[in-house]
Image 1 (spheres, rainbow, N blue to C red):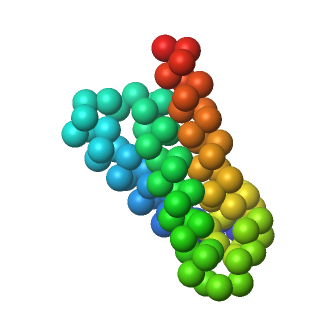
Image 2: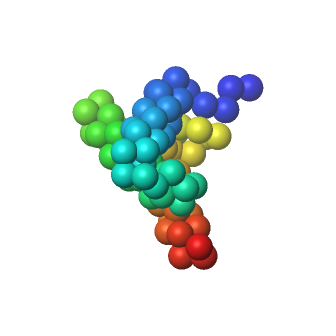
Length: 90
């Protein structure tokens, strides 16, 4: 059983790679900062891909990127919330 698709894996890698690069340039490489940066990037990339495909199936995992059968844009929102929570706790 495959729990991801290649689009989802690529979006995940790109979003966290870009977040790590930006975080390194700014000097913030904490887990919370990475998640705050990577979450919106992942959500935007996945939503753009789903919009570009034209069928606009926002909640179906196979219609865009997915990890563990969950659309990447949903995970991006969760990553953003977790990152805020991590930074708030210190």
